[in-house]
Length: 117
Image 1 (cartoon, rainbow, N blue to C red):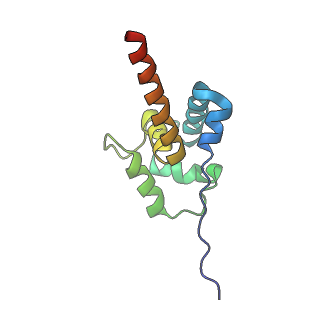
Image 2: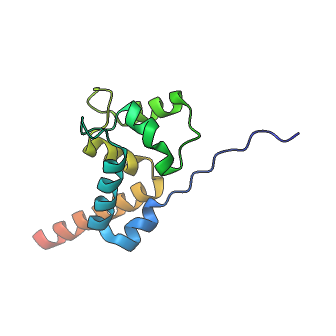
């Protein structure tokens, strides 16, 4: 008898960044935030994440997994994600994009240092 299937996570953020550019990617992340947020509160709550998780293909996640996602990104400890926390979390969950971001930052710093010399 086969064991339970592992959930595969495919990281689309690097592809999106390449196709859309930085501003386009941020725009799409903001759109994603709008889809998941509680319209009355203006933040992503557990309830709004659970209600809208199917939009991201996350309908199979248990409540404790959804709560874990919220805790992971909740920097200010209010139990919800504001737009900035959500965007930062999406970048943190994308190892390839984080690596690319580090390279972009290093290139920008090198360019600035050379400009000042």
